[in-house]
Length: 137
Image (cartoon, rainbow, N blue to C red):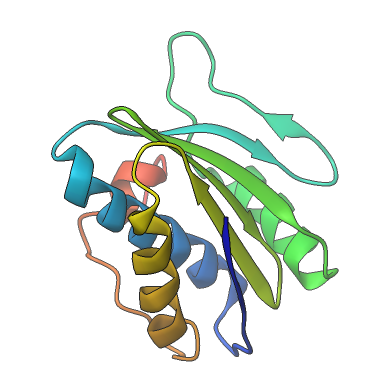
């Protein structure tokens, strides 16, 4: 597991999307075009899992719950899957941790990229990524 402490004035909603984007982007380096799946999100209020027939996405209600936890200095935990790679991520208002199963070098790459992106007010996120993780954006 690799961790990062940071200071960021970035909007928490943007922070969640940006972190998810770079976790996906760096994991795709080893897993290629495999689907990127959000398998679980744990907040202080609930644990969210995908329905049997639907993918778990950041709908407005879930995003508000995540942002509320970040604003209250609580940690939100995510479990992502891409191909054979499983990524466990913890995000709080001032820290980030990532643990991967298959390719541990990805941890360093994610941390390195987030060290550059988190201090920015407007992070780099591919425009085509947001619709893949949100229902209607």
